Length: 113
Image (tube, helix red, strand yellow):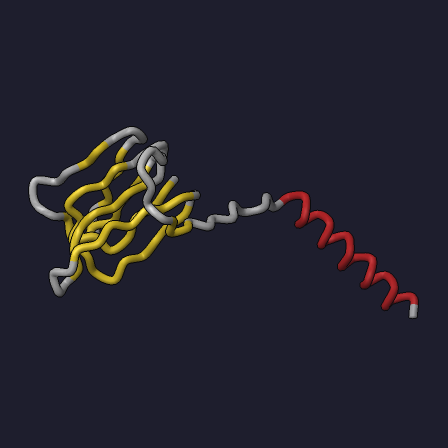
């Protein structure tokens, strides 16, 4: 019985050490929001594989995965943004920027830092 109690105390002590030593991770919750004039959301404009155009707006830090889209314009609003090209490259864009690539970028994901 005493060995069982000692083991339980050791487990609780180890859990307490880990709880203090391991910092909590950031909870990212990027959200698609309604685009509204005057708001400082991330705004992404482009077209999908079938040629249908879209305009998406996002709020909050996090990463949004697209299936396969071509982006013609990114307005960062008050966000620092990274987009991930299908070819593996990443492009960082500072807040307050309107980014228009020379030809549409083939994007697989976009992230608000």
